[in-house]
Image (cartoon, rainbow over the protein chains, first blue to last red):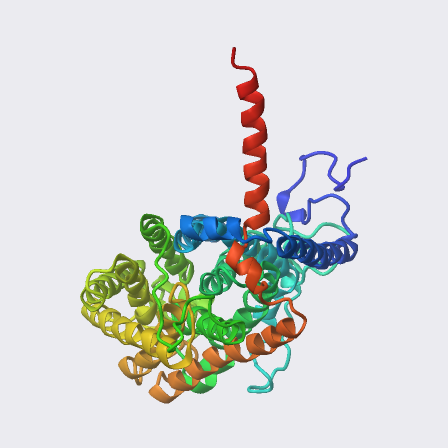
Length: 72
Length: 466
């Protein structure tokens, strides 16, 4: 039992192709990968919106902003 | 014997591209260093992360679809017969897009013995080398828009330019069988147009929709200077970009190939290095021309900018970019002169466009990459007029009109889709941070958390002092 079908290296390498685990599930892995990528953008946008909202509510006096500007 | 020679050539080629990938990573270290140096203190962290996260985002999307686009579209939108080209080895679900040896395992689907023999050692390193070009294309835009663009907006545009647009133009004009090469004689060996002009066009579109930073323009419309926070960091960043650029150049070549493998018009048995079009050149030629065009740019930059470090270094980069289209074939002195003249024009154009159209390009990327790349392709059309664009029969020869049309196409392919996407993002309030946040600095929340932690741990430590 092996996750890539190879039980031993007593083989002629010209007869060996893919050696990654769970061959045959490539399409499923691509779908999972695409969901991970799109999901990342969705989560990142939510996070960025929340951060901007918090920034808008902060430093009502403007003092910290003035200090930050002076620091260049 | 022949089998061993082929194996050795393949393994040498694999190692060659692997080295270029490592070298090209320095471009991104340089971009991050450079951008942070240009940004002001209250924007450092977001500036860094905006650029750095382009690396993973373009990587995964280039795996999912970018690599396949390169092989799928050389015939263009019906420009030459053939339609969509088949490229199973570049599809993300193909076993050759993963750990693979030279054969075909029993029951393995989607792989032929011929494809396995060719691609099992080359697919990953070719993909990686093209990917590093992709990330570069995205990173070029990043610096222009600092201190007011939302990171999320940039990352969407980074995927668009890095994993779709540039690789589409590469398929058309930077491919041995690309329709622009066949029909127009388009020649752009080290990517003046296919990487730099398209990225400059995209940066300009982003900047038009985004608008300038608060305080950039006086009430009378004249521009204020917003100096880099740390000029040392900026110049170190540009030095690192220069260093990584060596890898970029080497990766544009095929290091060793026989005439029989090219299967074109070259006769005899003399093996050679070639450019991306499989036309002969040498690493030695591009070493001459890289250094001479860099030097021409730095020398002209020093004079034109009156010794300003930011522009002297930037114009060195622009010198290389402007000679890149023809640096496989130029004489070194020609490369030097092109590298001096074109950046001087780009420098003037930067300030003209800033003044006339109120474009706030924080790092001059549109000038260095966009105008430099565009003009570099145009100049190559004249300089290399009548030379063969390809080793294959029936291809158009290099000519001014073909390269001019190609340069326009490259710039427009970056500009138009980016403009549309930025308009959409802007209509959803996703393109730019509000003015209050821009004034606070985009790092406000991060800096606040940092300062609170420093105060808390400091208080705890001080309480332990006897």
